[in-house]
Structure formats: structure tokens, C-alpha cells
Image 1 (cartoon, one colour):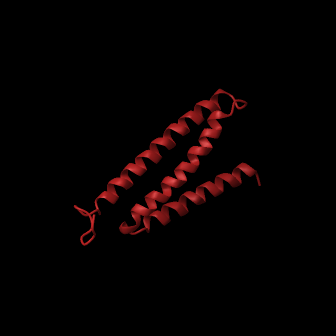
Image 2 (cartoon, helix red, strand yellow; image 1 turned 120 degrees about the vertical axis):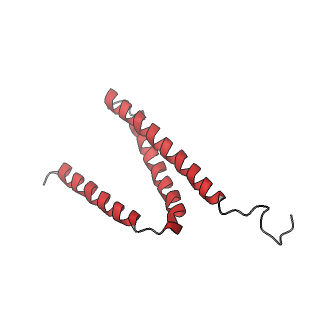
Image 3 (cartoon, one colour; image 1 turned 60 degrees about the vertical axis):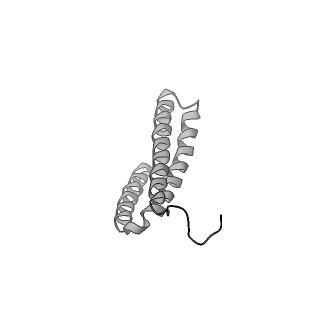
Length: 101
């Protein structure tokens, strides 16, 4: 079997598994899940930086690497902003009671 066909098959299966796993997550766990996906996006950001910095692969790879860096950076920053907003909803005004400041 062709290696590219196997890679495509694994990619499609991973997409289906990811979709079904994410849809089964309860609403209470969305904030920790968002933080975990931000970490995964940060890993893809490192990979896209490597691709964008490769000089021996041509102009197309540099352009696609730049687009990947841009998209991954927007994803990571936006995810952390949303996570921060969600966590601020659970903070008490004035801090916890009964503690000396």
C-alpha cells in the first residue's frame, strides 16, 4: 500500500475520533480541554516555525510555513484569552472570605 494513502487514512480516522471525543465532553470540562488544545496548538506552532525557517525547501514552503505560523499563533493567543475570560467568571469579588490580606 502506498505510504501517502496510509497517512491520509490515519488523518481521516484521527479526525473522526477527535470529533466524537470532543462532542462527548461535558460542559464543565471545556475550560481544561481548551487549555490542553492550546498546548497542542503550541506544538504545531513549533512545527510551523521549523517549516517556515527551512531555506532548502523553496518559496512555497516558506509561504505555507508563514501562514501556518500566523494561524497557529492566532489560535494559541485566542484560546488563552478565552480560557482567561472563562476562569475570571469563577473568581469571587473581593477574594476568598476568611483569609487575612
